[in-house]
Amino acid sequence: MPKHQKQKNKWKQLFFWLAGVNALVLLTITVFVFWPVQETAPPEPSVENTQRSSEFTVRTTKQNLNELVNAYIDNLLKGSSHQYSVSLDEDVELVGELPVFSSTVPVSVHLEPLVQENGDVILEQKSISIGQLALPNKKIMAYLKKYLPMPEWVTVDPANEEIYVAVTDMNIRSNFRVSVAHIDLEANNLAFNIEVPYESLGIEMTD
Image (cartoon, rainbow, N blue to C red; front, side):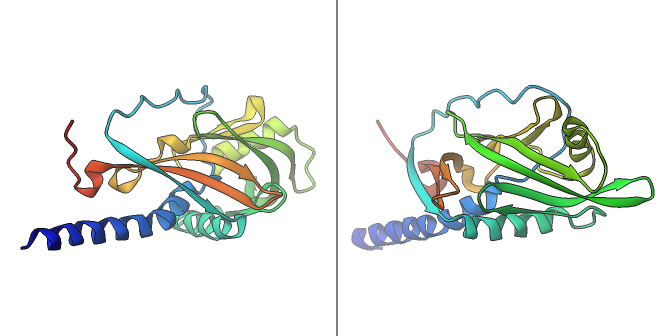
């Protein structure tokens, strides 16, 4: 194959990878999905990646992210008796049902997303309610932790009334590394950084 044809095919492959980056990061961010785990401290920042790579910034809207988040949740909850959804508006709202005795009661949690320096997100609880029951906020958060199926890279922390979303710990196909750059729900401005290892694209780098 002529040299110029090989070069053309390489650029074509790179184009398709970049075209899929936007959809891939939004699908995996589903930042705001919450998995019940043991009450432990937030995970330590990931070890610095020494692979040669390039970083891209992907911007989207809360409407687009909201659709993908709930599509992810629907898939996550297959085979589960529990249901919940997430809505991004002025803040992040989780709405679902929790089992109480032989029935269920509606639960609503409003959370404020706070981007961390390492690209993870803390969802700080603003308000919370569970039907007509008068329960402490920490107790309701403990119920969320116990009953709602969520990804393993999310830590529900009832003691501090917050949820730690370890975006940088997500296991993403092709070894892409995702981090949150900016979240401004009021301005409808969300940005994510995607680190693409050259090795994932079949590009060999020499010093």
